[in-house]
Structure formats: C-alpha cells, structure tokens
Length: 317
Image (cartoon, one colour):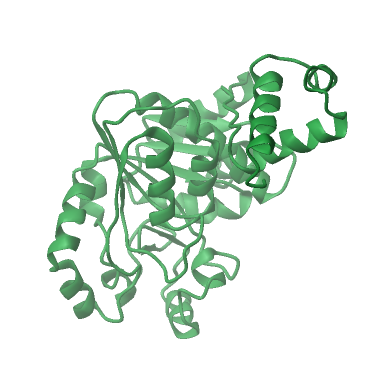
C-alpha cells in the first residue's frame, strides 16, 4: 500500500463496508465510486496486510468422535480435531492453527495469564489466525532460545505477534536454541537475564508447543540449525521427534544424545507442572506426535483430521 492517505482511507473503507457492512463487492464499488477490480484488489491487500482476520468455530460429529477416541487412547484431558481440508501439509497447519487460535482466544480471557510458547510453522499459523482477543493481562513467554534468522516461525516472532495482537506483553529467552556444549548451556542458563526469563517460562499457566519429526523436511534440518554430524547423531540414537529443544525416541524417552543437554530451555519437569497443549498437523507427524504424547506431559492435543485418523490406526484403536 502506498503512503497516500487517500489510498489508505479507500483500503479501510472498502474493507469495513465489505466485512462489517456485509455489502457485496458490487455494492462497495458503487458506494465508493471505484471499479469492481479496484475493490477486489483493496480487499486482497487488506488480507495480505493482516487487517482482516477470520475466526471460525469448528466441530463436526466425525471430528468430535475422533477427539473422544484420541483422548481415551492417549489419556488426555481434551482433544480438538480440525476437519479435513483436502489439501497438503500447509493446509493442515492452517486448519490446526485456526482451531488453536480459537482455543487460545477462550483461555486468554481468564484475566492475568502467562502462556509459554514454542516455535514452528503450526505455531505461526496459530498466531496468523488469532482474532478477537484483547487482554493486557496476558504474558507470552518463549520456552526456548531462538535461531540466527528472524522468521515467522521463531519463538521470538510468535511471542511478539501474539502480544501485539492481544495487547499483552512478550518475554523473550535471550539465548540460542542450542549451545555448542552442555557446559556452554549451563553457563548461558546462569546469566541473570536468562534466569529471569526461564523463571517466567517455568511458572507459565499454559504452554503451547508443536512437534518436529526429525526428517530432512523438518525445520531444524531444513534451516541448518543442526549440522550434518548432529543429524547423524540423532539418527543413530533412534530419534523421531523434538520439541522445546528436547529429542525423543518412539517410546517417549529422551534420546541418548548430548543435544538434550545443549538447549538452554525449559525442562521436562517444568512441562509436567504446567498445562501443555500440543499442536500437530500433517500425517507425516504421526510417529513424532506419538512419541511426544508417550512422554506424558501433554494435557491437550490439537490436530487435523488426517493425522487424528493416522494416530488411531497406528495404535490399533
């Protein structure tokens, strides 16, 4: 959008008339004296700029039944299943992000609430979809350190966007995602600013995390966070999942690798003390999701329908 005030006024007016005034594009065109093509372009620009956010409450008899079966199978307090999108993994992430945003909007109205957040594409999709939540009593805190690049999937960016959208505040963990050695990680955790951020994270009322599948397509590998030697080390240890800087084997145990001691992040005990919601999207996440669920610290699961079915099929229920 140009810096011309008239252009911005047209953008806002067209968006308001269409989404709030419930006018058709043709009605908006006549009302504003603009071509229909111009109106269409303004509406698309409003969506691209994040001025328009859609919130949808989702639930069908099929997904509700799947949710009940998953909750019983994995001993979870609550499960939410986003209906099948018929698309690829990116579509599944958007669907799970939409459902997670609806859940976050509900629990975020409880007054002063501290929410620990992880990182990843599904977490970013939740931030993209969040709408209708304003609460200055909210605090979003990163549960682990960050990467060298600023991306929409990083814990810093997710925290900042959620805080900006809700009027809350963001607390960052000023540390790298992985230290070079376990001793380096200990030194980083000993720093005052890191200690203070970890203290906030450990006391979080809720924690929202996603799961990585330890494959070449996963963010830790595709973005170069892990070196080829570290990838080989994880494979040798039978690692199938990661979350918040911890790496897991299929049975939910920590993999035998010093990488688990190199992340200056929260620990498993901290997650056991909080209320943890796991976001997972795409059938490729089935082994990784099962491993994190087997670790026993997840209270709530939000998944897409295809992954929900895959989880039940693999477990034989």
